[in-house]
Image 1 (cartoon, one colour):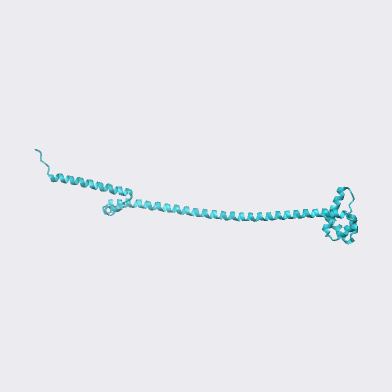
Image 2: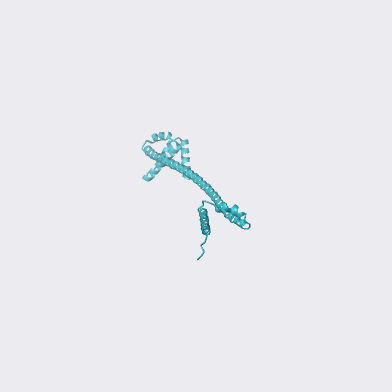
Amino acid sequence: MAKEKPVSEDLNKKLRFYLLLNVMLVIMALFLFDLMGILNIRRIFLPVVSSLPLVGKLAIENVEDPLLLNREEKKKEEYSLSVWEDKLKEREKTIAAKEAELKSKEESLASEREEIQLMVAEFEKSKNEYANYKKNVIQQAIYIESMPPKEAVARLKEMDDMIVIDIFREMERRAQSEGRNSIVPYLLSLLEPKRASVIQKKMMLQEEN
């Protein structure tokens, strides 16, 4: 008959198996927590492993290297962000300068537009005034032609020289267009000699210019 194994030996084997199983489960759980970021296994076991010869030095290097890489990556990211911030600030300055330039140009254009509008209004006013003046000169020329010469001369004496000249010019134009002689020379002869001479000289100067 085969010898039966002692009960204590079987019990020891079972205990060792369960112990090994628990250790493996614990290790797997720790690695799982490390992957999930709940625990940092390398930091926890670093003091224990670092006391071992050769292995400890390698373990320290393996732990610090990732941290060093993280720090370098962080520095690079910070530098990149700093460069982008500087570029954004320069861009903002450029945009602000362009906006100020555009605003200045808009103000200048608005001022020029206002000046042009004033010039147009002034021109229209002058044109209307000239049209009214021209109309008045024509009416005066027709009126004086229909008056007796002495009364016409008395009326001309009250007018400015330039107005008298414009009336005479209109009278000459009308006489020429109607094919008759102008009465302007006769009216000049009835004026005071001194004033008649001044008016004639001014008329000659106008013709020369």
